[in-house]
Length: 184
Image (cartoon, rainbow, N blue to C red; front, side):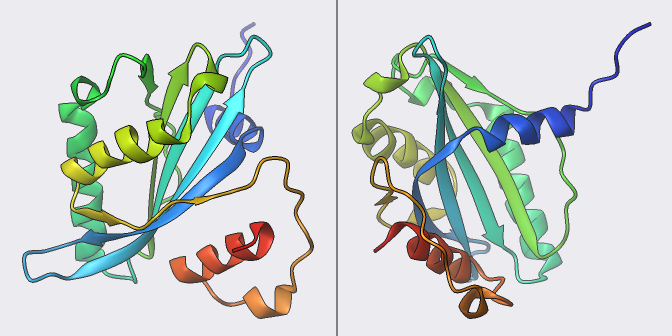
């Protein structure tokens, strides 16, 4: 008898072991008239016991219940994955792991993630993300990325006054939430 594996649950379990190391807001230009949607890039990492590990960029975009914007954004990310972009990255970026796990989609939000594997995760520095990785995404997608907010190493999270955050489902609300956890 073979064991049935729930890929979605395995993915969630693996993601729960990642640590958020940084985040950045961005604007995704949806059309030639300049219509945009705000988003947030969550940068996380996971180091294995042998020193190897992953850097994951998760793009979350508030499509504001705009079906056309959601369609345009999804098509842009799909095209990016089909064309590939590894030739635009240095040799230090050994592998990009594409996850094929589909989450429930809705017209209010778009989410996609990219994970990059490194033999020695500790050798990966901020400039790999700020000066190499994010500029590639900004050159291939219609993005204007804000400055990166780095989470201090070893930070502990303080309790947040939930009443201030409840009901705020925008990207800026999520960014405020992260800043409340990790400071300004």
